Amino acid sequence: VQLQASGGGLVQTGGSLRLSCVLSGGPFNAYAMAWFQQAAGKERKLVAAMGNGRTSYSADTYYADSVKGRFAISRDNAKNTVYLQMDSLEPEDTAVYYCAARLGRVSTYLDRYGYWGQGTQVTVSS
Image (tube, rainbow, N blue to C red; front, side):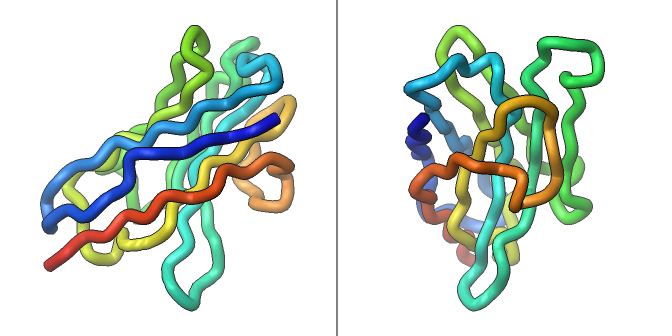
């Protein structure tokens, strides 16, 4: 399984970006997907996660408190792609963003994800 993330860039405070992550080499609809962020000198932490949607409980989504109401995770199973729509961006959102995948149920724990993309840089200027 390989993950390819894209969509990062430089944006002003209050702006928007949409990150994309394509999964290849496996059945996308079997995987729960997540986005993590890692700011310079800090630990990687969960931004948003989404189940594979195969069952009623696996459609759950989770968000870090810091991004609730501003970010939205979604997936298009036909395109093997997970998205992170980021609105009302703040300088504190500046980080490298990683997509991650795990078979089965969605998790909010970083160490439960076995597949990782290469990361895409998001920089928010004040």
